[in-house]
Image (cartoon, rainbow, N blue to C red; front, side, top):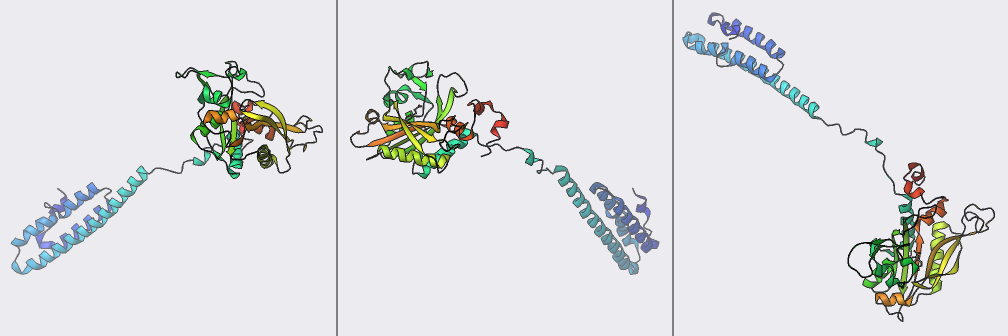
Length: 360
Ligand code: DAH
C-alpha cells in the first residue's frame, strides 16, 4: 500500500491531511489513463486509504475533538474526489477524441480525377433526330433485334424470292420453330409492322435501333449499324406530307437553308418509293470543288415512300380507310455526312481521340 496510508497522524491531523491532499493532486495531474486514475483515487480515499483509516480512528478521539476532526476529514476527502472527477472527465474526453481520429474515414479522396463518360456520337445523333420528330408530334417506339422473318420481310410485302432474304445478305438465328425462321433484323422497318399490329391509327412514330447485315466491313459498311425508322398513318396522308415532313427534318438537322429533292426508287413496303437527297450544307448545293458532296451539290440521305396497301393488310389496317408514309435513315451515314467522317470504322474503333471530338 501507498506510504501515504501511514501519513495520517491523529496527533497531527490537519497537517497529515494537507500532505495527503497535495501529494494526491500531483499524482492526479500526472496520471495518463483512467485505470491509473482509479488506482490513485483508491489509494487516497478508498476502503484501505489513509482517509478511511482516519475515519475509523475518529472513535478513539476525545469527544470534544471528534466533530472538528470529522469535518476536516470529509472536506479533504471531497476536495480529492472533486479533483479526481475533473481529471476523469478530461481523460474520457481525450480517449473519445483519440477514438474518433483513429476511426475517421476520409471521404474527400481524389474523386475529381475519375473521368466521366459521354454519349457515343451515334447515340447523340439518334437522340437529336428523335427529338426533332418528337417536336413534330411523333413518339418513339422500339422493337426486338432478333426478329421473326415474318415481321422483317413478309409483313413488309417482301416475298420469299426477294434477294434480301438470302443468307448472303441477312443473318439468320437458329432459334424457335417459326416456319419462316428468325433473323437479326436487317432494318428497323419491322417495328412499323409490330406497332401497327397492336395499335389503331392514327400512328406517328420514330423507331431507332440496331440493324444487322451480312456485310464485309469497309469504309461505308458495318455488319451492325443503326437506323431510325419513321411512320405516319392517318386518314388522308399524302406524298406532299412526306416531302414537307422530311424537308422540315432536313432544315432542323442540317441547317435552315437546306433544300431537299426526291428521286424515284424501289422498296417492297412503299409505293411509290423514293430516295431523299439534301442540298450539301458545305457548298450550299453549288458543288464547286466541294469535298463533302464530291461536286454533286446533293447528299443522299434516306429511303422513303407511301406505305404499300399490302403492308396495311398484313397488319390488319383497312387500306381504303387510311394512307401513310414511311422512311428509314442510317444513323452512321447522318453522322458521317454531318461531321465529315471518312470511314464508318471510326464509330467502332473505340479510339478516344475520335470520340472526344464529339463532347455532346
Ligand atoms: N428499310 C430500308 C432499308 O433498310 C429503309 C427504308 C426505306 C425504310 C423506305 C422505310 C421506307 O420505312 O419507307 O434500306
